Amino acid sequence: MTKPKIKIFSFFAGSGFLDLGFELSGFEIVYVNELYSPFMEAYRYSRKLLKLSSPEYGYHQGEKGDVKQLVTGKTALNLGELIKDARKDCHIVGFIGGPPCPDFSIGGKNRGIHGDNGQLSGAYIELICQQQPDFFLFENVKGLYKTNKHRLFFETLKSQLKDANYFLTERLINAIEYGVPQTRERIILIGFHRNLINALNFNNQSKNIDCIN
Image 1 (cartoon, rainbow, N blue to C red):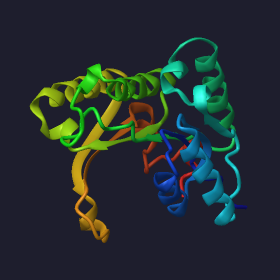
Image 2 (cartoon, rainbow, N blue to C red):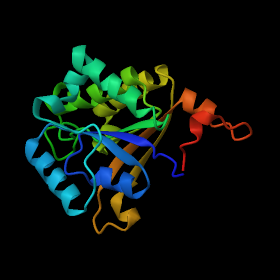
Image 3 (tube, rainbow, N blue to C red):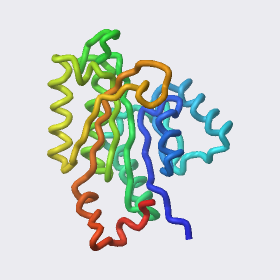
Image 4 (cartoon, rainbow, N blue to C red):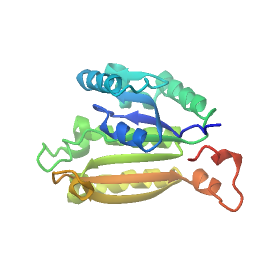
């Protein structure tokens, strides 16, 4: 019997390159969120071209793709119900996302947390703290990590996550280190929930982690 794959909820999905990497690594993308409709159209086209099935919980674009709207009211409750449903097959659920970066980019407007895009990073972290996925990935430009006036915000986000019981690891990586023919630096922040860490007791494995490949 094939073990169920770990479920991934994708935010700020763009055209789906991050999602594709996770799928090729054995995860299952079950929820796709993207505000900008042309990106979502490209995402749908790519999945069709690659003969990949549609996400179980669908595509969420336009107003439905606004992450800031997912942390309050009925939309937050609906997302919580989808996560609960995803856990029926596999107890482990992850969030992945790279919020728009121009407000932290060295070559951008550099408005930081006061810019519309900058606020989305905070909304994504709030969403993680609220919905409590077992793990998450956060990706952004190096300006958020290297620029002094933005680094304080980055550290504040990390403090929120630690208070929400996440163990964190971070690294500034360059795409050229992984065979991509360009220099593109990004900060990658990954968090694992305390409950998941406690469940990964290899001396006494529980049924809660049977779905790990």
